[in-house]
Length: 476
Image (cartoon, rainbow, N blue to C red; front, side):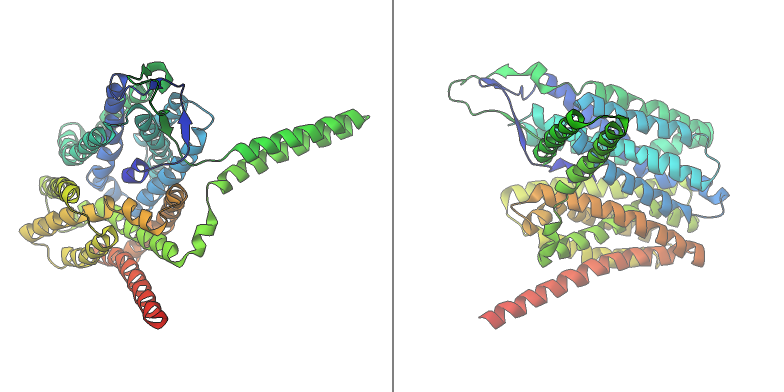
């Protein structure tokens, strides 16, 4: 979900006239911190299937894996949304350290897990929520420090994330062979503790502002935040405060005071609910095109994320060695990186229809998922994994642009809905894939279920296209 938060836009925070963000300086330190956040957050997650394969085998199979992944990504999405709201009231470092603390706590508790339900709580819920909180902190801080160099620095951070996806599977494999499961978890926890330092460098940009070379003519610098409207909530607080004061003046006893306190407590709950409600603009769901895009993207994400976690388990069931599985995962990650670089260069010179590319990539993915379970030949699996890595970038990289086409004037609200919908969908769909494995004792049907998720996206968008085409012809 890193790309989701990478494109957050919304209300802006204005600075004093004549001062601008450094576009470098301490921003480079922030950039390194953001890069490490991505590397440590996504790297170990991509090696999840390799790291916990033996653990799930001891539990009687891999049915718990989709449940853990579903809870992890659901917690990540929801916590990321709430973290964006928290940034309106608390500083970057305050929110970020909460996330880093939760992430490290999840790592520590995971070392001692004995059952799958414990892993769901430690790795899935706590660790996922911690990473989710850190993502909006990282991107918001990054956007505050960089203006003209934003694209170049973000590309470097994305490259660091991709590098971690390539190297972490091999690192985990080496650590498992040398130190065993528990000590490997402990070493990963020690590495992840560096996220505390990554969050500590997220200074307020006001500490590092520089004088504008054209102070008299320069426009006011801005810092992008989530589109969160709290003015109405504040006004309501003031109004209810006045009402409470009037009640106190006219009261003559403790019962009335207790009523006032109770109403204040209720108003706080209402204000929290109102702030969340104001950031989830449900009226967007009235637009059929947006609704189709939202549902299609959600199911495509479920298929993509679950595939990354379950592919190692499938390969182990084929009888592949741990090194062969690791190599296969690395091949997919390398091809993904190559595809991202190629796509970035291509789209720099040529304009593309993002929705069409996404649609074609999803169609190809359906056949790739089915092909992967049709043969256990090592070189065939390597080839399918490599092609899947090349195609995967159409889902992960292009989806924000697809979302923009569905709601061009209200992208922040559309993104918030996408984050919440995808998170809830993963919480529901991934455990169902685990139930499928439990019922069939085969990963084949799990991968067919992932293909079905892609089919839903394709069918929905095809139907939308045909309906719109018919309406245009009728109108003509």
